Length: 212
Image (cartoon, rainbow, N blue to C red; front, side):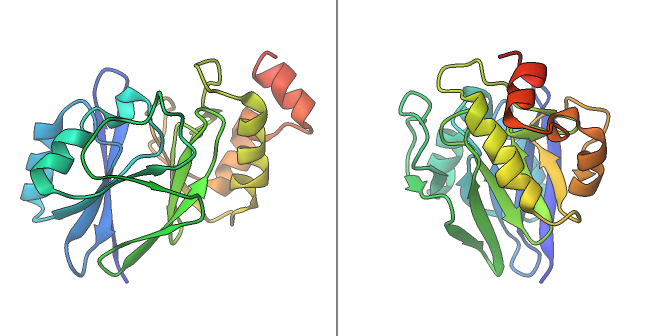
């Protein structure tokens, strides 16, 4: 099985939007469509990709403001966590709320929806083979903020330490923003360099890293 993964930096907040899908069938999901939908459409057409689904790591507008337009153009489902806050859940066509632990199939590619609340109540990462799309849960040498409505630093700690850090070191982290010097990194590298992943306790994370 060969996986399509295309990372695109778009917008004034340095968002990463992704295409992920099947090289065999050319089907893709668009992950966190925002800012410049015409650009995404041109890139999909240039590569002869067929958009069959939209995946949302969470409901903040800088990750979702293109979801409705794509859903209407292609009549495809828009997947978001059932645990996302109502005030962050976008009003868009074909919205499909799924439980963490669910699997999505794009052609012959299987994607796992992993619940990682903290930055928002319904934060999700999407895992396919050794690829992990982390949205705003984990950045390269950073992590998501928790001071917006619905944010919870304790939940983020457990998402980082009890979920993401339990994954294999070979996992490749692809974040939701280009806030670091690298576009992606392995989990092994992040264990060594990311200060938010080196805390010895929840209390240290909350006090020294999140300022609580």
